[in-house]
Length: 133
Image (tube, rainbow, N blue to C red; front, side, top):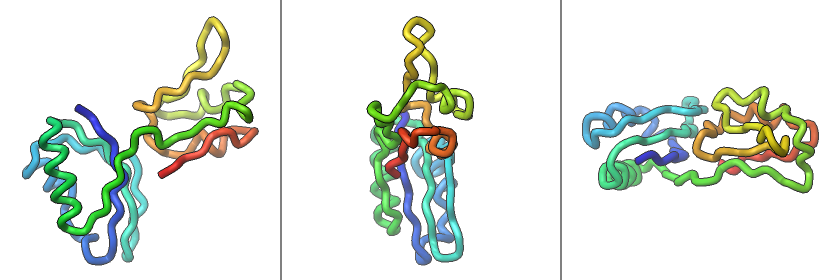
């Protein structure tokens, strides 16, 4: 099972070895997709791979040590009224979350592939894409 989370750190839990604990205590495979951390805290987008029970237990652990956890299901939004299916997002996306339907030429979005990097936001000429993280 895979789940994506936004983890929010503060200055009290910033020095915790989060990824080490996720691997050793919970037998998970964490993948850091995005991180913005400084001396005062910050946030990290992480994909956790493992059993449902291990993921749930790890989230409980993170909450216990003061790390805010937010489950990310559909963290990217595309406003279909603004989107003109130009393909700018397809060409810039490093995770290949966007693709072109070769029959209709419509742009498809695979939420599971998105790594919340934000490249599509700056590439979109009509500002049809937003991140909700």
